[in-house]
Length: 115
Image (cartoon, rainbow, N blue to C red; front, side, top):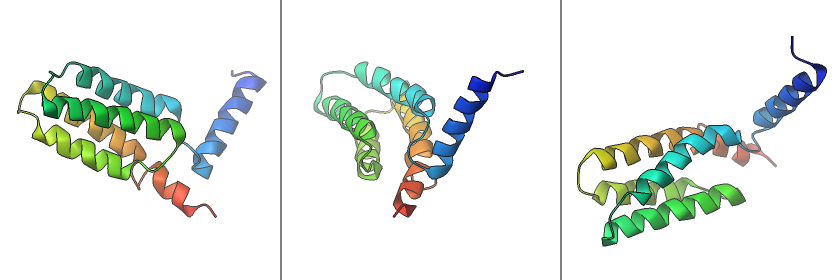
């Protein structure tokens, strides 16, 4: 049986989720970490550099808590400019998982509802 402290912590995190303040850090960490790792595997060409810069900008926006939709769209476009292959597919998959947490059906819809 969970201790009183565990129940209080779980209740606090559930309340924050319901308020829509921020997604749980764990939900963002795995797909964003994968995105960063895969972007690091890219070459030194112009498009690869752009993808890494997009990932960096997205990470900064997530940390600050600003709007991420435009950054997600730019990153998606730049990933689409990469040559086809497994790495591009892996980047797209990680971006899709991150988008599922960040986009309007997720946290940003709740943030927009606040006064």
